[in-house]
Image (cartoon, one colour):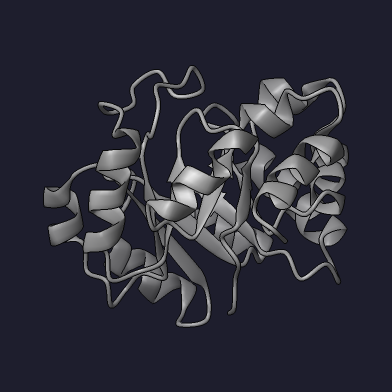
Length: 207
């Protein structure tokens, strides 16, 4: 499946709660978001499957893929377009076998050692970060900064998306570092107007 990493929205349950998950996502998509990842570390699989199905239905016809964070069972049950896993959240080979060749599979990378160990034949993209420290993931690795991001992006044979404390003004530096896009949580989910927030990222990217 083709995909565009330019403006990659990752949902946060608390930040999306007041407006509603589907409403927040669709506003962001209207603003130019190119991919959506459903991420909720505390919801049950049953709850996530219900949420994923609602998001998938809302995205019908948009061309925007829905990726599930970590939960292979949820991705399969909801008919999502792909899965994103962390270093300790699953096995890429098992995920690829279960999802099939057409699904999108991403992996989080923080170090050159992790990148060297990754089987790129199983993956479609890598998430590089965190670029900056972020409150949305308390157990994150040491921040890379733009220099560290550039080093990892240049070493990666796969397309990459940067994550970690990124704002619209960082689009240029992230692209210059060699990443194909930015993964955004709070800068869109917590914004008073998610559509306008997403538009700021798309404008900076020249889309």
